[in-house]
Image (cartoon, rainbow, N blue to C red; front, side, top):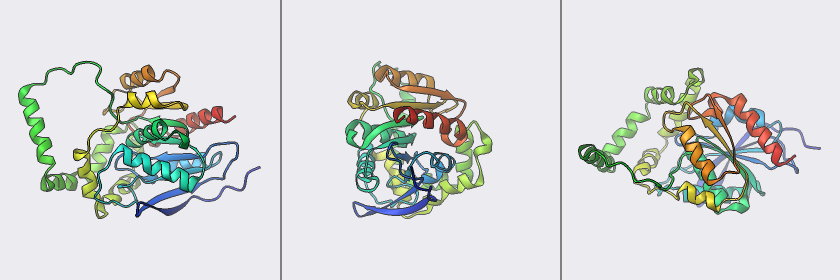
Length: 295
């Protein structure tokens, strides 16, 4: 028998002298693992609102803003999968108090994978939606056009400089630019609301947000996904929005399956953020998968 479902509440947790924002909803279930939701780059706990309202009926649901995003602090640090891995592991240990099922989108999915592989005591399973992160190169890359390679190198070097990077940040954080970007990566255009645009725009006004953005160009790639999968033993659910223009979902899904054949996978008619575009489908698939782990 469970207690009455409490309303979703937001709070702050101090981690390495930085304020981390999180929310909690639903009642604790002894027989079911809690859920921890992790957003993608530029997003926040707000991006899970369509999912929390459903999942809270069956699970204890937590959502967290990664350091550098949302309402969490934005210090001038070196951001990486290892940093967010440690943040999530410590949050599960210190705040949730027992292993969780991690659900992540894009960058958040890669952070989930790092936790599951390298901090397995915190994880009962992971559900990844259009996961970001690098694979090891198994085939030689095609020889680039020398002129294109030189231009790409120049642009990258230029963007490592403070002023050009700051100017780029001022452009991409404009509400109009945010909306245009969402229109490219969402198949369901009706999901692109003024509220969604504002939820992405608002954190970009925080002190330190520009330097977090700059860290994208400065940070080295994290551990390769295939290496992480060899270290992992927990259940894995993969949900793919096939309309994602940033990744070839079928091709990328096949690589995950090759390195972790025991996974469960589904392909949806959605873009990069299927949990926000097709919440009814995602909510049902995640609920059924978790229930199968904890009957």
